[in-house]
Amino acid sequence: MAKYLVIVESPAKVKTIKKFLGSNYDVQASNGHVRDFPKSQFGIDVENDFEPKYITIRGKGELLSNLRKAAKKADKIYLATDPDREGEAISWHLMQALKEDPSKMRRISFNEITKTAVKNSIKQPRDLDMVDAQQARRMLDRMVGYTISPLLWVKVKRGLSAGRVQSVALRIICDREDEINSFIPEEYWSLEGEFRVKGEKKPLQAKFYGTDKKLPIHNKAEMDELLGKLENAEYEITEVKKGERIKNAPLPFTTSTLQQEAAKTLNFSTQKTMRLAQQLYEGIDIKGSGTVGLISYLRTDSTRISQEADEAARTYIGEQYGENYVSTSGKMVKKDQKIQDAHEAIRPTDITRTPVMVKESLSRDQFRLYQLIWKRFTASRMSAAKYETTSVKISAGEYTFTVAASKIIFDGFMSVYMQEEDNQKGNVLSQSLEKGMKLQLTELK
Image 1 (spheres, rainbow, N blue to C red):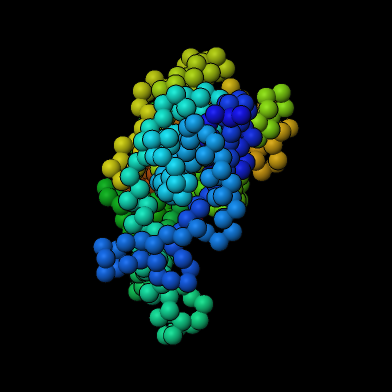
Image 2 (cartoon, rainbow, N blue to C red; image 1 turned 30 degrees about the vertical axis):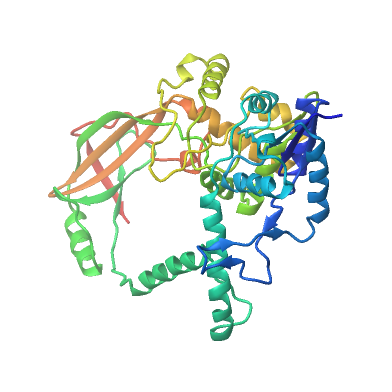
C-alpha cells in the first residue's frame, strides 16, 4: 500500500509523476479548484471583515470524497499543485477540505516536470505560503462582477458582464479611442532621389534629409519649390562613414512574450498557445523516453534562468556551434520592479532534446511551439550578431540626401533564431562609393 499521497492539479500529470516516484506514492488529481464561492449568493460577509464563504464546487463532491479516503490511508500528504498563486490557493483549499492533521500535509512545487525536479521537491517540502493575494483577487472578482453586472443589465443590455480586469481594460480602450478620434492629421510629403553611380548597373536610392538639420515638407507648394531647386543641382558624395553595430540576443520567453511571438510567427491565438504550452509542460509521451515534461512552467513574468540551465545551454552551444557563439554576458535576468520573479523564464527542460529529436512524438502545432521556445532559449545564451554599417551623405547645393546600409559579418544568435525584422532585406551599397564622387540624378520620387 502507498505510504504517501501526492495531489496535483491536472490528471495529465498523474501518470508522469507516478512513474518518477514509484509504488510508495499514490498520485491523484484535484482537477483544479475544489472550493469556491456559491454561485447563488454573494459569498462575502462585507459587514464582518469581508469574511469569505466557501463551498465545495458542484460536481466535485465525489472527487473530494475519494481524496479524503486516500488522505486517511497516507502517512504523509504532498500538495503538488502548480507553482503559482492560484496553485498555492488550491493547496490551501485542499488542506481545509481534506480535514486532516495539518502536520501531515506539506507543500511541494516544481518548475518543470522532470524526474530530478520532482524528486528534489519531495526532498525539500515546505509550509504553505500565505494565499491572501489570491483570495483578495477572487473576492474582488466577485464584488465587482456581482454588483456592477446587474446594473449593466438594467441600464445597457442583458447578458453583459463587468469584472475586475475587463472593466479596467475597457476603460483603457475607451481612452485610447478618444485619443484617436481627437487626433488632427497633418499633411506631410517625403522625397527620395535615385542616382546613377559610374560603373554600377544598380541605381543608388537616398532619402531627402534637409540642410544641416532635418527639413519637414508640409505640402505640395513646398515640395514643388524644393524640386525646382534640386532638379539642376550638382550631386556629390560628401561623406562615407563605416562602422560596426551589434544586435544582442533576445531574452528568453515570458508568458506574454511567448503569446505575442506565437501570434506573430505561428498565427496562434492566446488560448491555443497556452493550451499547447500546458501540454508540453505536463508531459508528452516521447518515443524511447516515456512521458516527459518538455518545457518549464508556462506562467511567468521573469526572464531569469537557473544557473544549471544556463550552464547546460552554454556547454551545448559551445559543442554544437563553437565557443565564439557562446554569450560572454553573465546577465541572466532583466531587472524590473514590476515583475514577481517567482519562476524562471519559459525554457526547454533539456536543451539537448532538440525539436528534431521529438518531432515524431508531437503534433504539428506542439512541434512548432516547442521549436519556437527551444530556439528562443538557445539564442538567449548565444553571442550578439555583428553588422558592418555604412552611411552615405550626398550634397545637392545647400541640401542633403542620406542613405544607410548594413550587412551581417557575424551571425551569432541569428544562426538559430531570427525574428520577422531580421529577415527584412535592407539597402546594399556598392563598395565603390567614395567621398568626392559625383552622382547623376535620374529621378526624384
